[in-house]
Length: 180
Image (cartoon, rainbow, N blue to C red; front, side, top):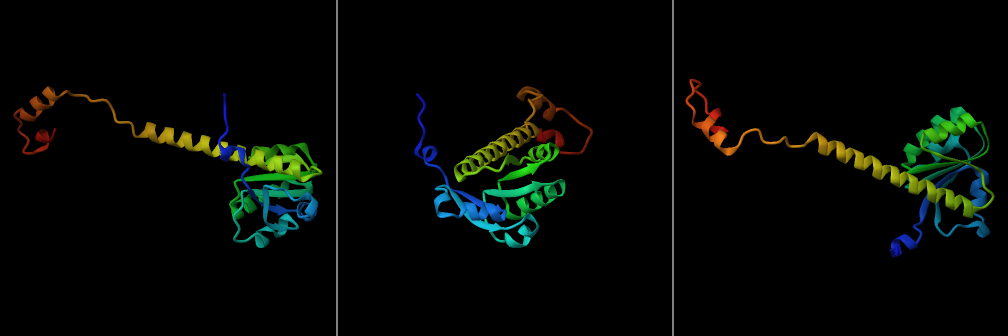
């Protein structure tokens, strides 16, 4: 039977930076507070995020937008790097399918804006788990490539052959054959 450790059973607090005035108000209402989402910073719009979200540590960049547009994609990536977020969750009310596809291709989670914080918490937890899985996979691939790069080749000569080479007479005035 499988058993979960205490660390796996206890939900880890997720630090979120929120962009979106309505979402900020909803998430900070006393009746909507999440037991595991910790709001570390917030601002009203994506356009002011670079100046508003300074010197924070966050796991998730949580963005709500009435309408997500193509130009917003570049801003999202800039803000993500700025706050060093592990994952981005974009909650939209209206969005073209092409923009949703591009958000997902960029590695962001895109979802229609839910009504309650329980669903938002589930989406954030899923995004963080996926980001951690991707980081582990990428690290494993890098480790594999590094290991393949530094593989010691098989020995070409046995001890007897090396001994014979080092004792062989040579016209070259060099110590190299003896170093073998």
